[in-house]
Image (cartoon, rainbow, N blue to C red):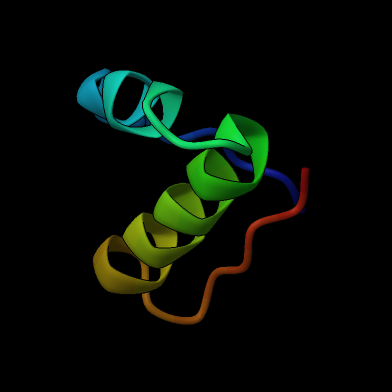
Length: 44
């Protein structure tokens, strides 16, 4: 089953200052999903 959740927009801004923004954004989002939706995993 796949569900979509809203990700805070400032995660994009925070990731842009890193050498690898894509990887850092994925790290932030995975942490956000773990914290706000226990038992769920980041799929994409």
